[in-house]
Image (cartoon, rainbow, N blue to C red):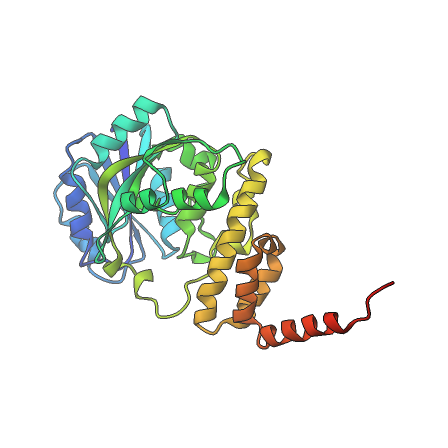
Length: 317
């Protein structure tokens, strides 16, 4: 039995799937088994996989159910101690498995995340971490951390730049898959783990995120709403009570970022309703007020009128 199961969800990526599989076959660590989950592809992607002669590679098929469901289907087949997820349009550098395995066994953590390069921009998530005053290492949140700092740490972690214990995947419910979710189905699961367990970030970059090949990267409108913004319990139910306030502060920051994004696409009503759903975002007074200006027509005028009316009230004796 292999030490690592590599799970690749596949949906209409005939031009990229060969690159992803090749990056796994070129790993310096070779004791792996791969499960490619064809999520109802309508192109030649599955045929390309079937042509690869490697007994370590298995492909299973399912009706289209979304990336979260495909990853979960692959993870259910894992009999290995560890599991790693790689998207069909991304790739790993040759030492990805070797380095992440060394780290997870040396530090006895639930998950190892490697920094990565984002193409075509060339952004390096290690540099992004350091810009926020964060160095790679072991992390374990207590609940009293600064939410903005926590966000800076966990925002650089995606589905396909980490390796984790297989039992952790099952303990934290796997990837979000309700309604064929195609956005934040990975972070919903990963944040459950990171906000509850010890994990480690290693660098330099060991993975490549091909934004130019991502379906989300080509969106010309606001991205779908993340599951945890629709329902915070998708994360809260998996976190210890002492960390609930940290989670809420984190989500309030994300709500305000989301509102600013939606406002650029004219989604004022949706943004206003989201702010009402997350009243805790008011704690960030300046950002909250700025968001109201963007989504409530005439808000600034009303504030000036309200201020003027206050100034005209007779002072109490």
